[in-house]
Image 1: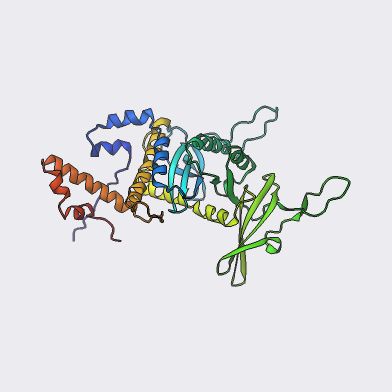
Image 2 (image 1 turned 90 degrees about the vertical axis):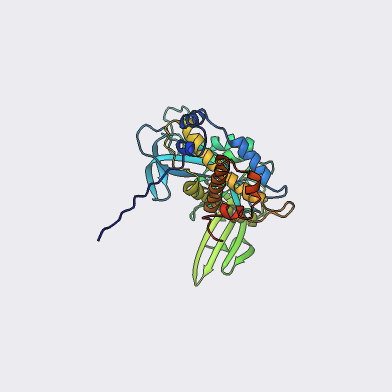
Length: 387
């Protein structure tokens, strides 16, 4: 009995292989990517095109890790890899995205490679000189750079619990936005005193420490679902050194109680909007997933900083274009609806369309007759995942 073995060849999705699908040679792509692309302005125009005028939007910031072999790639360092839950040697990318709350989808605006040699927090200098830059400083610099490309109605910048630090929150407020994030379960919070003050001495500012396991002093906002309630209060955060609005989620089911503490620097904000904004933060994880699987986010084989930056931002923009193409199929004037599509099917349709155009040009066929044929759509959908 003869055993047959099949060798599977995985072709990376990167600019080196773009020459397989075009008339340009590999060297042309290399020169263009080495020069840098600067896609933030194009992403801004695309986001404005697909968003309704009355659609609520937020900015989401997060980082993602990519594996990278070799020793001469720019920016190699030890970064936290969420997939393996430990620090690994590779590259890290800070990504700023705009999430449309009506569509419930995110569009990447910009990605910057995290500099090597930065710590999570800047060490305190003994001689009193300016301390070296930390990673939080780098993330703030990236956010400040992207602020010029934000839609005009952006008010909130949402990030996960890592960013719930004094330097980040203060930097976001100084840029003119409000910060939304998540606090630790043992966060040091104090109730604000609102009673009568003494005639002499310092004014009383606090009314006891917040017990996060006891919601009795919070205000009930609504019941989100069975066993899950949303509470709120304006408190003082010791670590953030400011007043914040809490959106306190309490889950009490089958005698077991758990809670999540969200916050916003907008003390007049709606706690329901804080909860919805933080829940929408997860759309950036879908961007990372789809870009890795289908648009070659982690397939770059270049080593220079310019080529790396061009490759990653081109990968994210390709995903934006796919979502914009789907959004354009909706009827004009209809309210924005959550986008639901398969990037695998969209990629297959694009490849089929490219191949069909190549056949039409190579065999000198009449393109109008091909595209008007009733079986044209059948060929475009060849290999597409059935709905």
